[in-house]
Image (tube, rainbow, N blue to C red; front, top):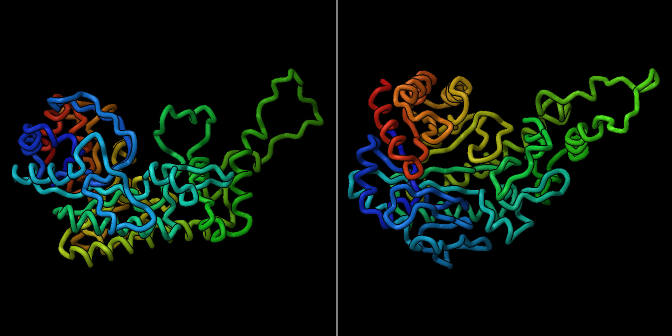
Length: 395
């Protein structure tokens, strides 16, 4: 089964959207039921071409009695029941509708509840990231899943950000690249030290992370014109940038990794239990990453999850690297469990159908049995046509 990702506003107000999606060659649509802020192109909509979504919102009617401390926001840029309207229109065109559910990525709730946001080793908050170590966050995610299944009645449930968000984030006028932090530094800056996380780690963890991050600053080039002499200390191995997060944390790595993975595992298992008790027959898809240090939309899943129906890996980078990640996820899957490739149909990907078909073949060879296509509302007509042709060409 192939799945096209879509926002409710791509359908509501555009009568041509359902048939356009049906002609794409997919069997299902991943329709956002809960989604973060964004600025989206709407190249097909009869009423607008760009839509500004200033805060994360819930695209189903918010029933106040169904929530506790954390209550999702209602959109003002589309009807409060936009998910339901879009769902009905898509199903009338013969498409399944799966509820695309973004969990811990929510700047609206993080800003309003800073004690529940991820904080790095320096105490800096990430307002867009709700920490899954916090019980209030877990309960919010449980309510989110239950409401989507009860009110939205989807044909499937897709869980994104089912674990901790990390340092990497496309924020308003993001200005972090000049620090030249390495991928390992990004992993270290993704470790949460909020009031719930910090006590779980070994005592020395915060200091180890801060020291590793600041090593480059402490060894900044001398711009004073000083000429080193024979008494200046030569760099040693401890000065060098660690090549892995395990190198950076040393003997602390195993325990910290176990704690981090457990946070995602607890959230995932509680949400699956909620989903199964609410709608036992609705299939569950996880956006997952076999890397135990992963943070973000694709949560760490180093040991697999037999209770899910589909495991989907991100395939937005180099196809060869993506294929390695897919292969690992396939190895973690159980008999009968499907593995999907989350395929980018936007720049910098080519709009050439033959090139796209080659990429699909690479992903299929690595273990993908279905393709999750991002994004059918953002892609130009030329890109949608190329994607449709690629789906027919790749076998």
